[in-house]
Image (cartoon, rainbow over all chains, first blue to last red; front, side):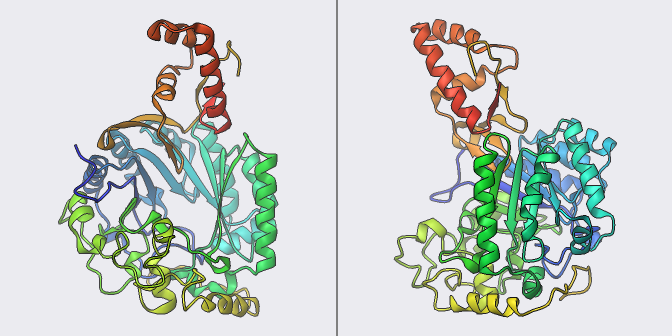
Length: 367
Length: 89
């Protein structure tokens, strides 16, 4: 077996977006604004084939996500199929549909790890942000069931202006729930989150206080809690290495079977993404024009072209470049060398003067 | 971590063969690393029953090397893996 044709490296991880169904309505949801209905979802056998093809292609991990992946009636069978394919299986869940029997079945099916999201540390605020009354209490119960089932737990806290001041309480919550790892992920502004940017984007002072909190907690909790911290692009001078580069490390499969370089790529115009019902994952990865389009550095315009960071950040995020400049091939405006960099400071200023109301994620209602 | 400790992989950490790349990898949540040949040898001996002392016996016999040096190397390696959250004692 080879690691891919020519200079194309094999992917390391697959993001399997099993469904767009979800009981929550988070206003920063990473799903596309045009959500897929249940009737268009891939069936169990097709997902099982996708998992086998991902492993054969070189993937080592699968992230079972959504929507809410446990909204799939066949979630245990899907975990078993992914595990049988040899993949490290990570369930990314809101937790509100989990009970002890389901968790025991998932553990027996070979689940390796659970990543549970929380919307805040304060219950009323958490329920308001998630748009689901009683959701926070159900998540805390789910977290305890995860550790009782003997499964390792990561707590995922998506943070923004309306919950960032409670970061110390979120860290305490992760410890209290027995999580080995906490992901503090600032909202990334595409799709639903972009529509809610004015209500979510933190200011510089609030962000810097949060960063100091994380740094202090990492020192104090070394060996007890691993804290991963994703900083927001809007306060950066250099872009993130989005997905580790287009078509380089990761691939995603949408609920309807589209093979994507990232979960948000369907927001880009002019693409015909491969359909896993028609082609193999290997064909999609190695032969499709969609994956070739922004792979490597050949597509880059100045100032990325010739930049000594071209192979560090790979030009940043294509979806963000398109969302902010209308050109998917532009340098990510998060880079200070981008001619559009001032858009970010202007968005921060606009958000600071804006209210707190949300446009909640709803099926069949685009923002 | 001391010679009597019985180390094991931390919850969520898995040692897997990466056939596509012809190597072994340690996988964890959003993490992966490729152990060098010595670390791989030690990781393969983690069975949740064997002490570090017993592992040093096995490796000293296998490599026909001085046991005190092997024990010191294995302890240092496992302490590093412990600090990185890969191994529990």
